[in-house]
Image 1: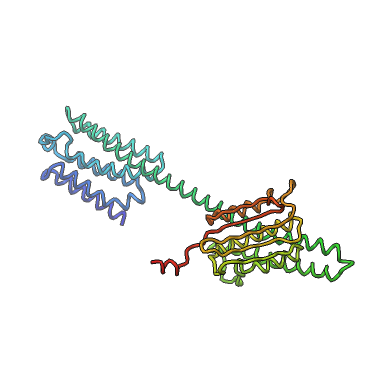
Image 2: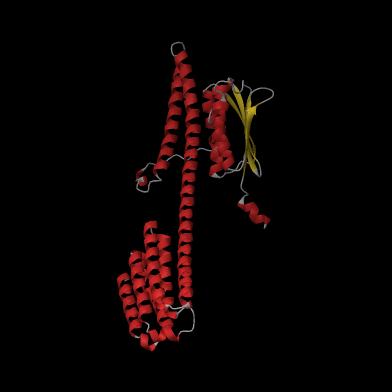
Length: 386
C-alpha cells in the first residue's frame, strides 16, 4: 500500500503539471499539497525517499506553471510555491524521527532546491519576500521537529528513570524481606546451636530439643527463601510457574504466637498482649507489622541480654499499633542494633505505609520499638456514613 500511494502521488503530480494551462499555479500547489497525504506509507518506511519524491513533485508543479501565470499573479508569495509546504511537512517529520546526520542532509538538500527554484521563478521585490517566507516555513517545520524530538527523548529519559527507581525499590524490598527473615532465623539457630554444644554431653535431652528447634527454624527459613525466589522468577514470563508446588502464604500477625514460641526456644520469653477488635488486615500492613515484631525480637535475642520482653499489638479504629519493649542493656557501642540494617528496614516499611516508627533506649533501661501503621477505612463504615 505504501508503494501504491507513492505511484498515485507521482501520477497526480503528472496530471497537475499536464493541466497547468487550464488552472492557476495556486490550485496546482494546493493539489500537490493534498496529494502528499498519499506518501504517508512511504514516509513511515523510508522518510528520505518520501522527501525526494515530495521535492520532485513540488518542483515539478512550480516549474510546470507557465510564465503567463507568473506574470498575472499580484500577490507577493506566488501561489505555486505553496507546494513546498508539503516538503516542509516531510522535513519536520524527518528532523523529529531520524538521526541527526540524516536530518542535516535532508535540511541542506531541501534548502538548496527551494533556494534555487524560488530564485529562478521570482523577480524584483518578490524574490526577497518569497525567499524569506520559504526560509521561515522551513525553519518553522524544523523547529517543530526538534521540539518533538526533544519531547520524545525527555519522555524516554523519564521512563528510564522510573524503571530504574522501580528496580531499586524492588531490590530494597527484597533486601528487607531477606534480612527480616534470615536474620531472625540465623540468630535463633546460632543460640540453639550454642546451647546444644554446651549441654550435649551432660543433658542430651536438652541438646536434642535444641537440634529439633534448629531443624524447624531451618525448614521455615528455607520455605521463606523458596517463596521469595519463586516470586522473583515469576517476573520472567518464560518461567514455567504452572508446575511449581503451592507456596505457603506470607506470614502475618496471626503467626505472632509461633514467632513468640520460637523466640522462647532461643531463651527469651515473650509476653504477648493484644487489644482492640482483631480483624483481617490488608496484606501489606499485616506482613509489615509481623516483620517489625520479628526484627525487634531478633534484636532482643541478639543484643538485649535479657530473658524476657513484651509485645503489645493494638487494633485501633484508624491505626495499628505495635510495640516491643525489653529491659535489657540496650544498644552497645560495638555492633548493637543501631549499626545494623534492622532499624533501617523497619523505617522503610513504615515509611512506605505512611506510618510512624520510634525506636530507642528507654529512660528506665532497655530498648523500645513502637510503630503506628494507618489503617484504611472499612468499606462498610464508609457506606453507612453516606
